[in-house]
Image (tube, rainbow, N blue to C red; front, side):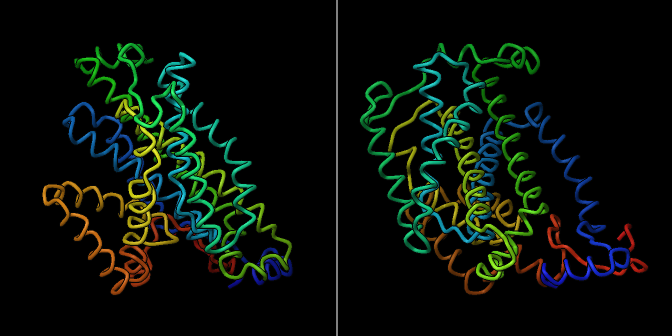
Length: 365
């Protein structure tokens, strides 16, 4: 049932229908998700350092994939330039720490806010284009940002720079975590970054789910079904798309800030890498399932597992990923989760509104 039909029926018989979004499965999964988040929060007490590093990468890639999926799968914005915001987030963090003398942990949200503000004029420019032109312009913006920051001598120019040990050695909470877990400062720093990555993926998942269940989500679904039809019923499509674009830029900057704080080194080529921050992300979304929340999460987990299993095979690693991506696009065009959900009707993050007759509506289902 379309949104306009739902509105007409609700207005005509306000007490005859109930709108249901959550299901019994989603409520059970919500309880499981809370338990999982608590377990992940305490993971540093029993997980090895390599496992924590893999989890950090999973969290960051899933966050970035969810944002790209929100843009492409729901708003119809095919961007191949999200590396611009990842790189700007990393460089903003380094500038705040090295030039401004800020604490590294506090610099993460500040860097993301700075990039979100920068994305406003950038978005104003790229939104003048549509379709393939939009995709090309986003990539051009990323390349321009890379070339400009390669001229910033204070942060190493084209070769990049590293964070001084004195900066990361005085991070907020470092001594507390070191005493709590009985580890050295380097391991304590890794734990703090792990918690920051975990908080980021929770923020992104929650933010995407909230947006899709809100009035913005209704508007996005209407835009996806037909942009002209959505405009005809009074939906400001450009404003909705721009809001999604800003949210994705903010989250991408968070990912970049956390990632390069972990590596303690940044360079233009690594910060604005098309392969690492866009090509891999598109692969993750495609194999997981476009226009779903579960798909990018599953895709990120599978990508990191494959990366660890095949990284020792050199070029064959990329070949296997390419063959896998092609096979999934041919055999399961909706991705792994999209195909599974279509066949089973299972939704862990339901966003579709179901109109039920009041006498048949059962809140326990």
